[in-house]
Length: 56
Image 1 (cartoon, rainbow, N blue to C red):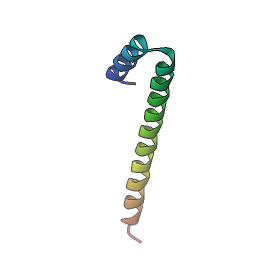
Image 2: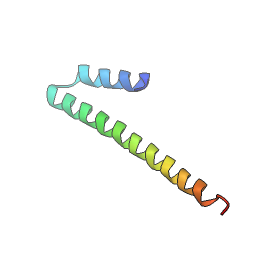
Image 3: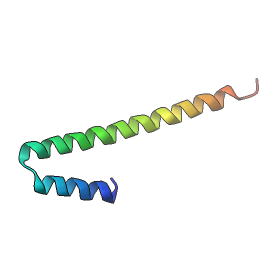
């Protein structure tokens, strides 16, 4: 987690109520999971392109 994300989450959690805090934490977890999925898909795609260029 980056320092900017930690700072943002801390600010949101301190300044909002409990229900909103749950939403912020859920959103952060979803965002981090989506970033990991996108990164994995990117690497898979790059690997497919690399394998397609190998000589027979």
